[in-house]
Figure (cartoon, helix red, strand yellow):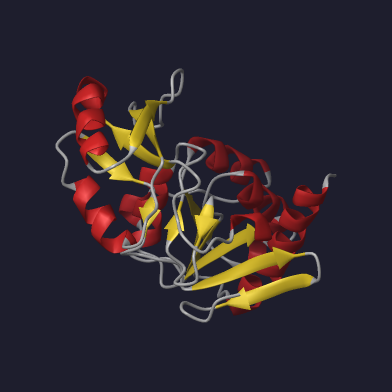
Length: 228
C-alpha cells in the first residue's frame, strides 16, 4: 500500500469511528464513490447491524455495499439520511469541495442533499488554499456538450471532454481546467444555469459539515472556516 493509500485507509477508519457509534438501527447511511469511499465501505463489514440500509451515489458503490450484505435502497423511498460519507478531489477551509473525478458528481450531490450531516473524508493532498487546480467536472447532456463548452470558456475555463466516459445517468463529462475559484457558491450557480448542464462538481451550496483529513501525523477533524 503506497503512502496516499495508507492515508486514505487511515481516514476511512477514522470515519468508521466517527459515524458508527452515532448510528441507530433505523438509520439509512449515504455512501459516496471513489477510492477513499471504497475503503470506508470495506470497513463497514462487521457493522451491518448498526444501521438499516444504505443509499449509494453510484452503481459501483452499490455493488460493493451489496457484496458485504448491506441493503441498498432507492433514494425515492428515503426521506433523509443520518450521514453522507464521501471523499473529495479538493477542499478549501470553508469545506467547499470539488468532486467528480469518478464521474459520479450528480448522484453524489443528490444523495448529499438529503443528509443531516455530510462527512467528507480525504487525504492531505486534497487540501488547497484556492479551488481549481483539480479540473472542475461538469456533467452535460451529450447533444449540448460543445454548446456548454463554449459558455464555460466565456467563464474563463478550458473545458476538455473526458472521452470514453459515460456517467451512470448516460451523460458526458467536461473537465474545466485553468480555474481559480474565489467564489465557489457563485460559480456553482452560474454553471448550473447553463442550458445542457446536469450539474457541476462544486459542492459549495451544500458543502461538507465536517472533514476528516488524513495527515502523516494523524487524522484531523476540521469544521468549516477553521482551516487545517
